[in-house]
Length: 237
Ligand code: TYD
Image 1 (cartoon, rainbow, N blue to C red):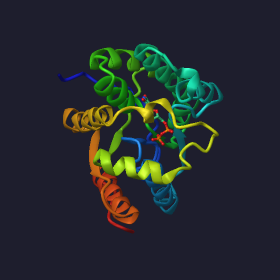
Image 2: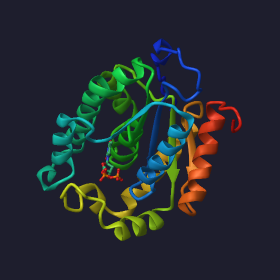
Image 3: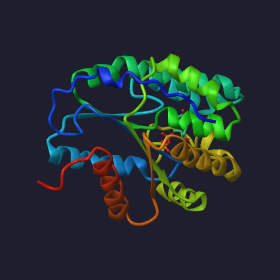
């Protein structure tokens, strides 16, 4: 079902010359898809371009958001209803959008986000069974209709993703134990993966699906090509 995605992106300052300046770009995908590593790779590209940016992660990115993260991703969240979970992710997002993302975009700074509403649609929607139109309505209220210019979905078979997360071991640097979400069954993760893929075909004007299979460098090249094409960045200067 198509969902209207009204946007206020047109209001943003456009006094910058680089096509990536002042853009809102999200990296998302299943746990273990490598998006955090790939965001760091892309940060190097933005630095090389001389584009000013800020990077945020979800849930979290603000003091209030990090508190919410601790409820969501530790034992404290056990027994939480899926709707309460969805609303907490959105509450963290609302704080991040109004405290950090909107002010950054308003001053022409590019924003990189590690997860956004696309995660809620995939995890609490496709995975958890909440209707897409309900999530979209809450997202519109939480963010004041702020949608990314581009969402990159890093796609990886669930078996590969699981292997990466178990090998990583240090995924919970903040002293958190294996979180509730990651303990869920492979079936759930399969639905999440399909939810991400489905968003890409539903919103082709603001999403790109990129395969996360291959070496870090190969995937980085794929992502950079997709982003440069999307924003019509001129060939290397
Ligand atoms: P995190 O440890 O940050 O994982 P990752 O490094 O893969 O991003 O945990 C974030 C978890 O929260 C992840 O399992 C996905 C989940 N999540 C949702 O279920 N809904 C959401 O809206 C968001 C933002 C995250």
